[in-house]
Image (tube, rainbow, N blue to C red; front, side, top):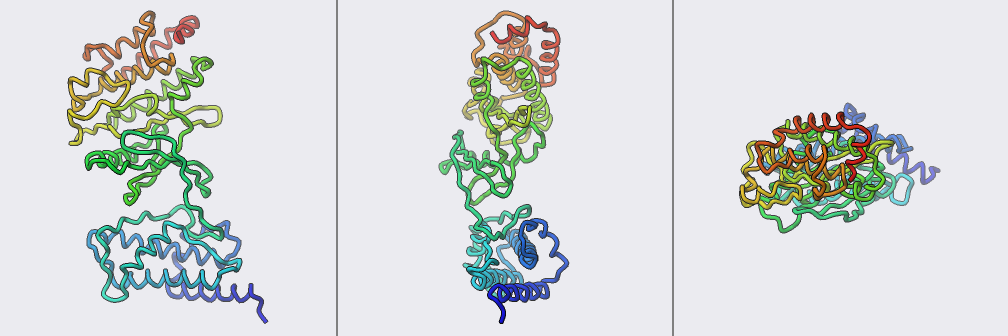
Length: 395
């Protein structure tokens, strides 16, 4: 007589053979690596087969969204997959082979149940959102897949920011969620922020990963602190060498950003973040919500001047007139903050002030004309200093 364990194993083996006969085995390896930690070989094969088939059918549904019609054969296949998953879970309940489905995919499958038809294809609801495919982590697990537990960490002009810990990647991520009361233009800006950050590939720019249209939010890289908090907390003990390293990173970041045809327009010590690695701090530019693009139609004179280090003359000129010399103005103010720990420029004597004075000149034609020039002058200024001069920068 077979034990309960053997009965379940025989059942699973039979079902996997059935699925491979139906779908073929040419794609079985594609997701197998995601299930290396699963100790039961037949389950690894099952999970890989279903992972591939679900992603294939979900991807096809995304391609049919504009058409609004999900074809008959694919409708039947998706109905079949969901029925089989539910049947497997029912038959394996309370056994060591029982498995859980990712909540995101489970929600999609349940939503599809409401409109899928086995004959003549299925009408896709107009409010059905594009499916975010899971390609790099398991969608099946032998233990419950936890729903994300978010912790509120901040509030911006357009969005709230949360952090959460991902058990699979063993690290923190950030969710930036658009406010519910945004105007159409403000929500467009929120989406542009994600799109533009996604185009920027630099170690000095916060990385973004996935936009969730349904929940009006996106996921991005987690940083340990803001530049403002880091400088403020450590100002009395922070060495000048570390300040100089941070400034050089900031300048490299904005040379890259500006050379990609992007003006940030909201430069401040709270929008520059800090990520801590072993033995080094790396700056991460964030908050591109006010970004100005070369062909943008969203910039208007009425846009509020939000950046605390922005040129006050923009109040009179209009924010649509923002250009590279306004960007170098803000960067000069930011450099002053990093080097002194002060937002206000109170000491107007010495070689450091001469460097700062050019960047914030009331005559825009006397300012640094781009970040490359600002970088060159900063490097020249640092190289010209002796040890006694360096100590005076802190004053």
